[in-house]
Length: 615
Image (cartoon, rainbow, N blue to C red; front, side, top):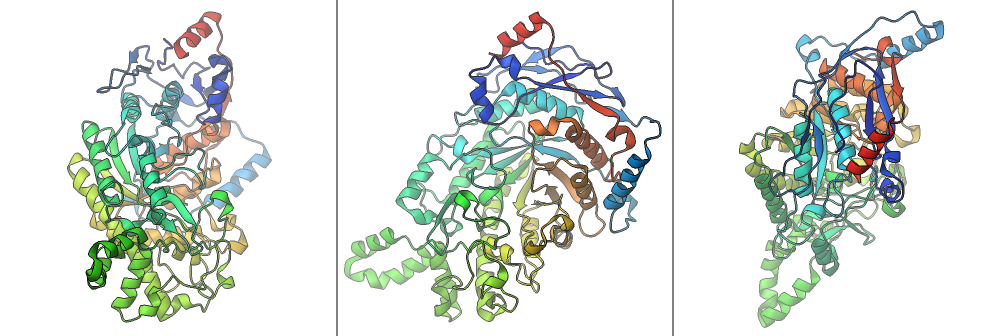
C-alpha cells in the first residue's frame, strides 16, 4: 500500500504527488502505467519551515456502508506549516522598481482605521473539481485527492467546498439517494483536519463559465421535462433551458407527484440524516442552490451552444406557459361546468407557471394588457442596452409598466429563494452548520442607468433602485450568509465597451449586507492565479466600507494551482487572509525565495510498490 505519511519539509526535496483532476486524464489512465502519470511536483521552501513529521499511515475505515478503503496520512489538527520571513540580500535595481509599482497598484483606495476589523481572520476554502464524484457514483481519483488535501492543509487552508449534485445523488429514481462517494470524501477531509462546505446543487453542470464536465439533472426529472417542457425556463423565442427547474412551478406537483420544493426539501433531509454526525464539526456550511450555477438568479445568459456571449444583456426568462395538457384535461373532466370552475382553478394552480403568474399580477392591478407577455422591446441575448427600447437610457424600464414588470420578475425570484431557505433552515437549524446562498456578480453594463444584464437575471438594480438590499434582507431573515462573486476583479481590467464596474458592484453589495445585518462571504468569479487578483481579494475582504468578508472560497483546485508561482501566491494569500488582509503583496523572501522542485520518484522497488498499490 502506498504510504501517504507526511514528509519532513525541513529537509527538501519534499514530494507531493498530484494527478490532474479533470476527466480527460482518465482516458490516459487506461493506457499508461499509473506511476508515470504522477505529476512531478515538490515544494522546496527556502523559508524556515517546521512540520510535524509523522510516519504512520491509517486506512480509512468504512463510513457506515462505504466499502472503499483508502490509505491516509494520520495528520493531527495542530499540524500546519509555519512560515517565517527570512532575510534576503539586496535585489537588483529593476526588481525594486517592479516591487514599488506593485505596492502602488495594491495599495488600498480607502484608508482603514478600525484595528479590530483589520486583524480579523478570514478563513480560506478551496473549491474541489466539479467532477469530484463521477457519473458512476464513485470518488474520482481518491489518492490524488488525498495528496491535494494534504498540500492545502499544509498551506493553512481552512477547508474545501464540494458540489453535491442532484443529478448524481438522486440519479436512480425519486427518493433513491446515493451518498457513498460523498461519505468517502467527508471522511477524507476529516482525516486531514479540514472543514467542508457543501453545495446543494439542484442545477445541471455544463454550459456555463468554468464548467469542465457535464452532469445533467436526474434522468427521471428529465423524463418529466420531456413530457412537459414548460417545467424549465423559457425565453421569448421559446428556447428551453434545462439547467434548473423553473421557479414558476415551485408549488405544483410536477415531479412524480411531488413539487420541486418538496423534492429539494426531501433531498436536504436525506443528506442531513446521512451526515448528522459530521454536521457542525466537519461539514460547517451548507450552501443552498437556488438556480443555475447554484445562484439565486434566472438563466438569462446561457453560454451553451453560443446562445450568449459576454457582454450581452441577456434575455428575460418568463415564458413557460400554463400546462396545456392539464388545462384540456380539466375542461374534459368537468364537462358543462368547466368554464365555471376554470377561473378558480387557474388562479389557484396554474398561476404558478411564469406566464400565467404575470397575467394574474397584471389583472390584479387592473392592467390586464400588461400580463400578456414580457417586454416586447427588450432585445436579444447579445445586444447592448442602447440597442433596445426597453433598456436604453430613457427606455421603458423606468416607466410605470417597466417598474411593474421588473418588480414582479424580481419578486418571484425572491419568493423562490425565501421558500427554499425556509425549508433548509428548518432542516439544518439545530445541526450547528451555517447556511449560505450564492448571488451572481453581474458586473457588465453596471455603469448603464438600466443595469440591463442584472435586470434580465432577476436583480431589480438600476440607477434609481437598489436590487441587492431586498436580497440581503431576505437572506438575513433566515440567518443565511450572502455569498458573492467577482471579488478578484478590478474595473480597469475590464473592456471599456462593456460598461463594467465589479468594484462598484462589490461596494454596493457590501453596503447592502451591512444595512441588512447579514454576513458576507466571497468567491472569485474566474480562475486567477496572479498576485494582482489575490491583492484585490485582500482589499475587498476588509470592512473599509460596508461589510468585510467572513470567509473566502477560492475557485478552483486543479493541477495549475499547484504550479510554481501559482502555489507560492496561494500560500502567501492564505497567510495574509489569516492576518486580516494586512499584507498587500508578496514579500521578497516569499515571492522569490521559494522554488518548485520537480523530480521523479527514484527507486525501482518504490515504483513497483506504488504501481501495485494504485492499480
